[in-house]
Length: 74
Image 1 (cartoon, helix red, strand yellow):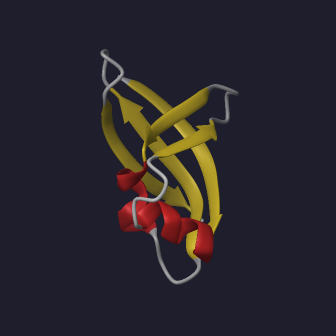
Image 2 (cartoon, rainbow, N blue to C red; image 1 turned 135 degrees about the vertical axis):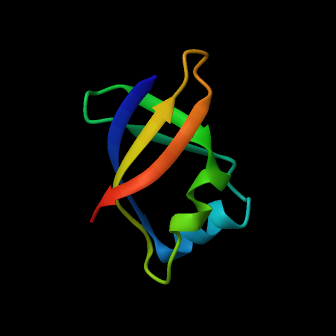
């Protein structure tokens, strides 16, 4: 299983676009420099009144299918 960490900061208005499905894919750069893209609906549980902020861990299986996404820090 592959595990990567990244920081995500989406202000409220931008986060709402992801939450409402207006944007379908999240593209971020992991701490190791690797670019990651995944379906935007995975960030819905992390949207709050301020948007989305924090340090995240994402795990993929050997077929590059997203296994889990979790916030691990502010």
